[in-house]
Each structure stands twice: as structure tokens, then as C-alpha cells.
Image (cartoon, rainbow, N blue to C red; front, top):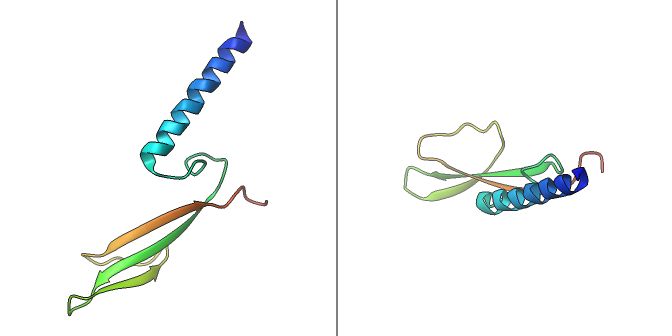
Length: 81
């Protein structure tokens, strides 16, 4: 029966989605087109005296050798909602 086959495929897709979300460490929905992620960037940079500084960054912030870029994401919902 077609309906049973479709239901089985939906279950397989749901399991695969959960596995991908768990492996990626991303909240559910971020890796799909269901929700748009809101990305936040923080740059960690050592100064000449060796002290580590935190700098707010954007997608276009230029990186320097030795910089560490932290990216965090959260779900924002569908656009227009």
C-alpha cells in the first residue's frame, strides 16, 4: 500500500533529521528550511602583550592570523512571522 510506504519513508526521514541534529550540535530546525538561523559572531584576538580580547564581529569582519571566531546560532522562526 502506498500510504504505508510513504509513512515508512517519513519515519526514516525523521530519524535521519534527529541524527543530523545531534551530530551537528545545532538546534533542531536550523539545518532545514523550516527556520532561519540568527548567527552571532565573536572574535577572540591576542594583543601584542599576549592578553586575549573579545571583539564583536560580523560576517564581514576581517580575520588576522591567530584569531579564533566563535559562531553561535539560534532559531528565529520563519521569515515574516
